Image (cartoon, rainbow, N blue to C red; front, side, top):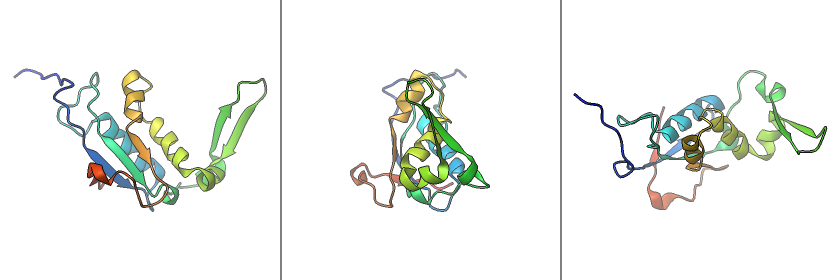
Length: 142
């Protein structure tokens, strides 16, 4: 029995919808990262981009467990000396929950060419309505 190597022509991409309402943000991000990489497929190979498209709905209703809402912070730098910005996740979840969910998924995907390409297939939506109905996405339950 020989090992098969997936080729770009052999890969079919599906669309999946994950509902984040009432679920921990980390658990939702793990499932999204698995689907984006294609690790749920039997043809998975780490050197090939065989992942699917993922739509996360109800991002503002995702739950941060423990004291993460008050203690966890998002840091970014403006590029100027001494301009390190920090934002609490309580503020981030009120103002930009889509960005917070994208950060969680980004942290679980490798920082390689394949990982950056996989992240372009992620769509995060604030409410329950998503604009990709034409692609006929399937609901992913975990």
